[in-house]
Image 1 (cartoon, rainbow, N blue to C red):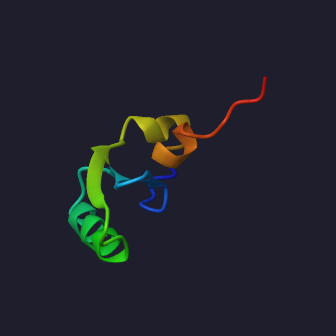
Image 2: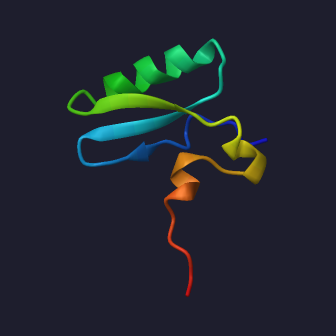
Length: 65
C-alpha cells in the first residue's frame, strides 16, 4: 500500500497531510510544518484512501475527458 506522507497537497494557505493512525504521523506533520512555516499544516486520516492506491495528492489530479 502507498501509505506515504509524500502524498501531501499544498493549497493557498494550507498543507493537507495524509495520516495513518501511526506514531510517525506527528513527526511528518511537524516536519512539513517546518518546511511550510507560512501555511497551516493539517492532517487528514487517509488509511481508507490508500486502498485505492493513492491519497490526497492523487485525489486532486485532473481526469481526462
